[in-house]
Length: 40
Length: 247
Picture (cartoon, rainbow over the protein chains, first blue to last red):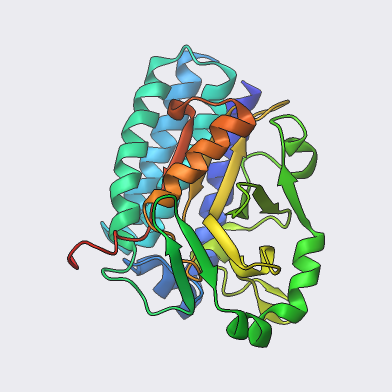
C-alpha cells in the first residue's frame, strides 16, 4: 500500500508543478506546445 | 496492493490526463509529460509486484502510445546542428569542437565531476535516485554516463533551458568533453528499490539529435549493465530518421 500511497502523492506533485507552470505565460506556452522543448 | 488501490491510482491518472487534454490540447506537451510520469509511476508499482494484469496492460498501452507521441513531438526534419554523424549503424555522433570550446568547455569540468559511469544495477542506485530524471549519454566506448544532478518536471518541460551550471545552459556534450562523441544521449529514469529493475528513457538531446538507432544502443546498455529484458526497458525516440521525408 505504501507504494500506491507514494504514487498518489506523485500525482499531487505533478498537479502542483503543472499549476505553477500554468501561472506564467512562458510555462503555459510550453504546456500547450505540440513540439518538445530542447536546447540546441 | 489491494484491488481498490490500483484502481484508484489508474483512475487518478486518467483524470489528470483528461484535465491536461481539456486545458492544453490533445497533442500538447502537458499530456505527453503526464503520460511519461504515469509510465514511471506504474512501472514503479509493477516492479514490486508483477502479478497485477491491470498494471501490465496499462504499461503496454502507455509505451506504445508514448512512442508515437514522442516522435510526433520531435522536429519534422533534421535540425541544422554543429554536430556530425560519423556513423549510423552503430550510431556515432560528434559535437563540434570549436562551438563546444566557445560555449561549454569552462562549465563542463563541474558536470564531469558530478557524472558517474554506471556499472551494475545495485551501485547505480548509490548515485541516482529511483523515479527521477537525469541526463545521460552512451559514449563512444559504450559507457553509460549519467550526470547525478536530478531534473524537475518544470525543467524538463522547458527543455532544460532553465538548468544552468556556472551560468551556462546545460547540454549533453558537457558530459563528454574529451572527445565529444556519443552513441546515444537523452534523459533516463531508473526504477527499483535495491537494484535497477526497469528503465524509462528517451533520446531527447537537441545538441546531438540522436538517430533512431540510438534507442537500440540504450536498450543494449540496459541489458548489459542491468540484466534487463526489453519488456522492462522503454526508450522513446524523438528525432525522425534523417532519410525519411518530412511529415
